[in-house]
Image 1 (cartoon, rainbow, N blue to C red):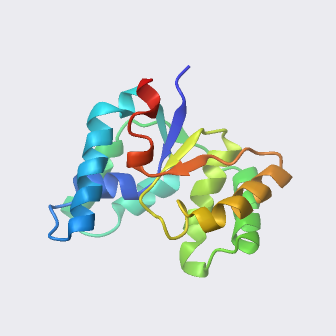
Image 2 (image 1 turned 60 degrees about the vertical axis):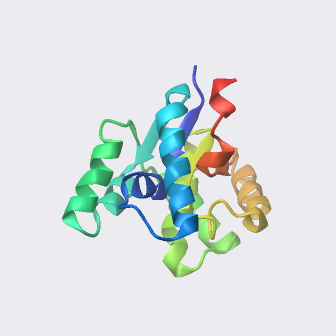
Image 3 (image 1 turned 90 degrees about the vertical axis):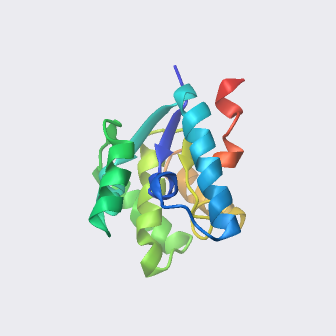
Length: 160
């Protein structure tokens, strides 16, 4: 059985974005494409409805490209347990109101025993300062927090 990866919205966003002039953004776009092209086959990829909703926002052409990238990925359910864990993460980490959806991504992955949450959101998700609080809240509710990481951190992990 392959490890499972929850694809958070920033991944299809970087994958399908128009080329940027910003060096860091260009590097993230390239690392995302490299992971997508060489490593994703080593994992079972999942998403939640919130990813579809976020990918649908904005420019119609860009939204279509993001949605095409995740088309056919298994959808994990938004359950009462996901809602409860989301609320606990929002209050306990704490997440600011603009980042409540980030808690929802973590809760989906934790409740559904997903191994990794792949993201470029390093403010509220792949953030070492928040990791211990996220893990403690998940553990207190009986869940293992997913390993929250960026594509460069997971680039070769599935192939060894």
